[in-house]
Amino acid sequence: MTSLRPTRAYLAVPAHRTRLVAKAATSVADAVFMDLEDAVPPSEKSLALNEAVQSLSALDWGNKRVTVRINAVDSAFIAQEIRALAALPRLDAVIVPKAERAGDIAAIAEQLRAAGSDRPAPVALELLIETALGLVNVDTLAACHDSVAALHLGVGDFAASIGARSSDIGVSPDGYRHVGSAQSGYASAPLDLFAYPMMRLLVAARAFGLIAIDGPCGAFRDSRLTESSAQKAAAMGFDGKQVIHPDQIEPTLRAFMPSDQELAQARLIVEAMEQAEAKGQGAVTLDGKMIDYANVRMARRIIGLGS
Image (cartoon, rainbow, N blue to C red; front, side):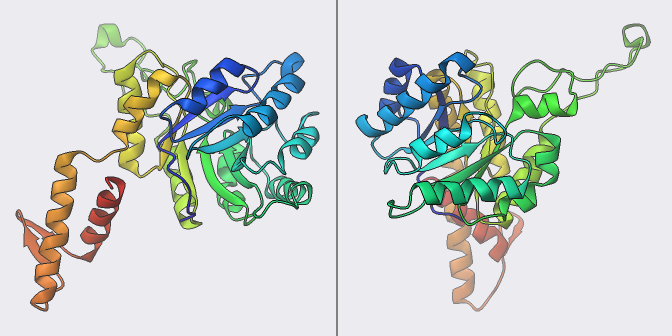
């Protein structure tokens, strides 16, 4: 896996909102991306880029991973953004929205390298998968250039791309209710709109050694929904989750930290296998369950997350 700073709570902030950017820099979020795309109206694009450059140069970001979401590959703004950002030493990566075609991503990567040739290391790319075509091509996108470091799931635009009947970001519709169910007694069928795209993106990220970031929960004032959404992503194996408001940072960080019970169980598994190895055994029974080296690998990842 690509070695990056922690990315558990990945805070989005509009680049032209300087007060919010300054607060993001001092927040406890692991990572921050300044947005030049959806959160910025067309009339403010130039201002947002100038403010992003200034913030990268002037603010103390501590140990955060700091990125900028540029505009789409076919926009009128992307060439100027690449020229302005590529050489800035504090910029860790650019997030490319609506990533769909490998050729476009490779071209952006080479443009960033050319414009930032004085940097000791090129700016990394993080790809936002938020359309049906992007998800179909996610394996190719993940492997298209050595600058690609992470995959993000864009839950809002993805839902729109597939025609989902939902207007809430990061939340599945309530479910499908059979016609006449109020009279017939049919129950509502559960629907998890994002289970497949989340797993599809996660598998591609793991196959090519990339970081996997889940999309945000739009209900930023609902701490319980925020945390449960993050717990789902953490349990699946994601490295982090986008958050759109500072109030979501703490619940998201909690969700990505193993509980004391999880850590204790993981340590028991490792200890039991070490004892089995000392006896020349490759498996052992623990609490009525068979434990082997696959369990140890899973347990050590949990221990690593808690360190």
